[in-house]
Length: 448
Image (cartoon, rainbow, N blue to C red; front, side, top):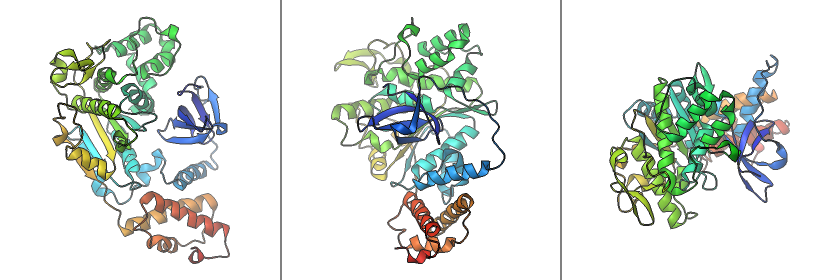
């Protein structure tokens, strides 16, 4: 089965299969809302192509309850649904203010640092929401070494474009919708991949699905390709995909949008024992190139490319270039605005900020000193108390229970706050509420 098979889940809707394990018994699925889960194969319905959704007006009765139930089921595993993030963000006023300031600033790279379970993913989704509302196109990708490792620029680009969102005409649009919109405009990008797509869509609007899938990097019928440039799943193709990122940012600006924001969650995976030294070097090269593109490094437009150390490299930056497409620069020459956000655990964040990484032999990235650093500090006691009350409110709406005291629930967990992160605290609250609901004759105080 293709690793990019399209599927449907009864709760989460449509998505793409990105990986499998246990001999295919479980599949990693990225859904259209940006969430990713490992799910059993028998829980999924498989499609060759995503069928068009039939627009139905939901029944008035029970709609709000369905929303609350969906939120509660997500909270059970310690996450907040993407579309509920702004209603469930507590105790992060300082950090969120810093992110809003960064989004409007001239700084183009930010490191978001926080302990495991501290709310990095939640904070990243908040950034995604405010960026969308502030006229950015947004990509949100988890740097899973098995799905979108940095040493594979093509896989990273594919994951980014599958998650791409932008608001056009007051509606949230996907990358496919975005291309359809662009094809109706007179835009020439200078990027051979993008211009091939725009020209094809002008001549054959009905080919949108296949054309968009091809540009994203999904598998399509080879007979479709014709004279199209080829995708390459090699680390040396970093120049192709960095240029594509800058081209997406440019086309967004041409549509009066501010630019493109790419959010990399679990960025600690850029370093780890699971990477070979070769893979680590390739990851650093791509990361170096992305940061230089975001900072509009002029060398990327003018440096000569020559063959050395087994591949083609830029004379000034030492970045690798695809042998077959080495005339493609790392960035487009037109005006664009690309911002990058990386969410790290503290040890990895410090590693990068202190310049111990990105050796990129023999040249370090000259822009690391301009990176914005935002640290997620531990939540205060009152924040945890408010979270418990918010979860209780949702729980009562779903199950119709009212006998549980929110303060009693909080007090039961308060002694464990030192050892509990935000994610585990939320799961703990729900476990207590489940106990109280299933054991109505016993009090919360009896729970060990």
